[in-house]
Image (cartoon, rainbow over all chains, first blue to last red; front, side, top):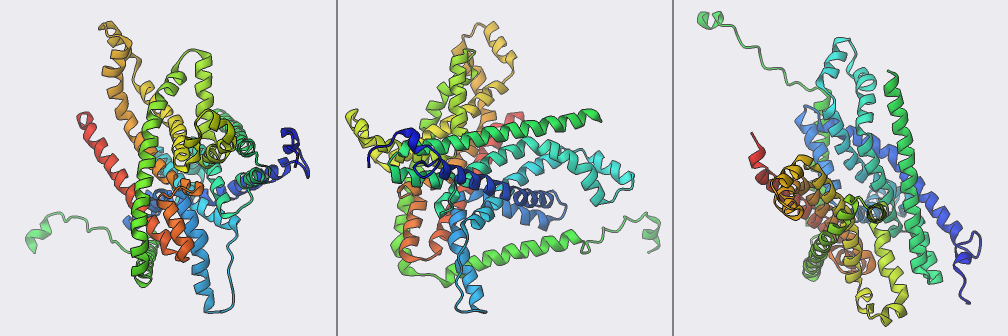
Length: 239
Length: 273
C-alpha cells in the first residue's frame, strides 16, 4: 500500500476515515446526552435523600455515593458489563433455560455513566440545597403551598441556578468518561479512531484527531452553558 | 400524682410513626443490606482456594504497581505543575496563553485518549525515537503511563496551586513587601503556608482521582491492580476477579478520604473557635 497523504486519510468517504470518526463523535454525544437526564434525576433524588431528616434515607444515599464515587469508573463498567449478563442469565434460566443474554454496549455504558454521574451530581445538588435559606421553605409554607409545590415553584428554580456551574463540571467529566465505553466495544470516537490507527498505522494522527474531537465538544458545551447562564441571568434581571 | 399534675408536663415526644420517607429509607437500606449480603454470600459460595492461591500474590504485585505509578506521577506532576502555575499567573500574554492551552488540553480531553496518544501515538515514531535514544522509555507501557499521567495531573495540580495562591489576600503580599521580604521569601514563608491549607482538600481529591484513573493503564497492558484482575478474569471467567478488585479500590479510596479529612482537621485546628 503506498503511503497515503494525511489529507486522503482524513477525507470523507471510502478512502478517508473522517466519516467514521464523525459517526463515532455522534455516538459519543448521543451517549452523553442520553445519560444526562437519567443521571440528573437520580442525582437529584439522592441529594434529596441526603438532606432528609430520616436517618435511614441518609444512610442509603450515602452508601450509594460512597460506592460509585469510590470505585474506578473502569471497574464499575467491567463489573456491569461482565457481571450483569451472568446475573441475568441465572435469573432467566428459571424461566427459559436455553436463553442467552448479550448486554448492549450502549445500554451498559449508559447505566454505568448514569450511576457515576448521579453520584457526583448529587454532591452538587446537596451543596445547592444547603445554599438555599430556610426562610424560603418557611415563606412558602406560610403562603400555604404544599411541599411538592414548594419544591417545584420555589426551590427548584433557585436550586438549578445555584447548581448550574457544578453541573457543568459534571457534564464535562461525563463527556470524557464516555471514552471508557470504547473499551467494551462501543463504536464511539476513541474506538473508531483506534480502528483507523490500527489499519493505517498512523496512530499519532488519529489519536490526535480523537483528542481534538473531545476538545471541540468541550468548547461547544462551554458555549452552550454560557448561553444558558446568560439567559438564566436575564430572567433573573427581569424579576 | 397530684404533685406532678401541677407541673406543666413536657409535650410528649413526637410520634415516630411511619411516614413515607421512613418507609422508603428502610426499604432502600434493606436493599443495600440485601445487596451486600448477596455479594458476601456469592464470595463465600464461590470461594475457591485455588483461585485465591493463584491470584492473590498477583493482586498484591498489581497493587504495588498501581501505588508506584500513582506516587511517581503525582510527584512528577507536582514538580511540573509549578512552572505551569507560574505561567498561568504571569502577566506575559505568551506565557499565560501557553499555560492556558496546556491546562485546557489536558483537562479537556479524556485521560484514556492522552494515554493512547503517548503509548500508541508516540510509539509509532519508533525510528525517530531510536535515533534520539528515547525508545527504551516509550517502549515500556509503564513509563508511558507515568508520562501521560504526570502530564495530566500537572495540569490539574497547576490549577489547584494557582487557585490556592490566589486565594491568599493581596494584603499579605503587600505586608510582606513592606517588611522588606523579597518575593521568594514572601512566597515561602507567608503565602504558601496559607495557600496549602486551602489546597489540601483539592490535592487529596486529585490523589483519589489519580488512584481511580490509574485503572486505565490496564488497557495499555500494564499489569497494575486492574490489569491483574483483567488477566484473572480472562483466565478463569470468574466474575469474583472484578469483585475483589472493586473491594480493594473501595477500601483504598475510603482510607485516603478519611486520612485527608483527619489531616485537614489537624492543620486547621488553630482556625477553629
